[in-house]
Image 1 (cartoon, rainbow over the protein chains, first blue to last red):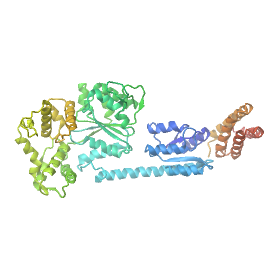
Image 2: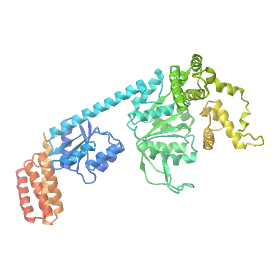
Image 3: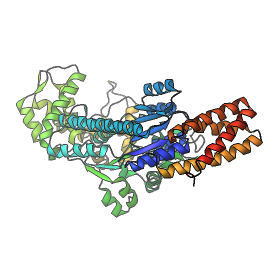
Image 4: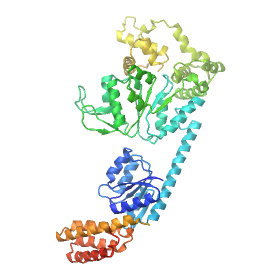
Length: 466
Length: 90
């Protein structure tokens, strides 16, 4: 049995085809209006396995339907119905991607054969794609950012693969630096939305008062400073995936708005009355225990259940030690290439050291350590000292070293702001880029820390181990 | 292979079309006759009535040419065709 969409403005023909397909065990939905039918396909209200469409219709031709499907990268086999006087158009339809055509006067047996052939081929293509993806995951090919062969990590990848084709919302959890965004990107890449945008936002990095407009956009003049209209991230991610990192930091007011979008698949720009459709898959992530936040009253329970349809927990690096060396090799190749250093390898002691570390900053800390070692390494082998260089540097540093100025002028006085930024950089380095811990150590909230980091970066400075 | 119930509905709708054509003919509303003729031309043979497709084509052409005599002749043929199919209609 297949779900078939019939787009035909001739009611008599539609009724006949519908009755016939029903008799043959298929479920056929009829739409007289091609424009509405296309909208329903785009918004996924209709998810047909096959489209049977007339070529000549008043509001939109079959050719235009094919062009729109192609433009929106919707891969559904289409069979066009044409009169025997418009064979040229039928040929054009094939060029535009139609699977086949049937000619009026219609022969129902012929329609059935053509339709079942298209369904068979389409299912074969689907199976082929699934097998290819499974192979890519197994071999780690075509997913350049995803490395790891431990059973724990493969389980995460397997789950990512299985959920990729669905439209369910996903909540990715795990410690800082475990690769939550990498998994979100992988799910997007393996999904039917892969050719549409993947848009990521860190909810704790944007000031609360700007976040709503960032997510939903705003109309010109909707608030002070809104000098022009702005499209939001939901609009930017249309048809694709929106990754909401640190969702646990979203305030309750925005949680309510997000819940409405997820329920109704509609949103409004700030300062506008017009409802807009949101065809976006939301993947959210947090390092927090959201169930605990719900108990504390910091997070809406209904939103938690909405987002947590499929939970994916990424294991820490210390829980999957067998991934440390493959990851280290991957980062070694990456940074060797970036720094023009060929044939670098680790000494035996360095390998042992890598395996013995706790990696509280997880993959991100490992990546930073390798990058630093590649830069510092003078020979062809990275010794354990280069890996530990940062550790050593930190232990010899005075807590007041952040007062150092790069300037040779001894009379130069640092501003308070500069001292603050230098100190933030120092603590960030000490914590291997772990922002949560840095914010905690500095007794400031994460938003303030992110704002400071953005200011530092805007000044053209790097913020060390991030 | 065509569902009998669907076939009955089809013939019933042609009776309705015939009445619409008569009204349009009286009002010299050729556009309505052209549209009805065009549809009959497109689907008649599919329902097993090639003669209806031919009739539809003549009605469409007659309406485009505003050929009153031709239309009168074809509407008479339409009436005869319908009377022959009365057992099929609802």
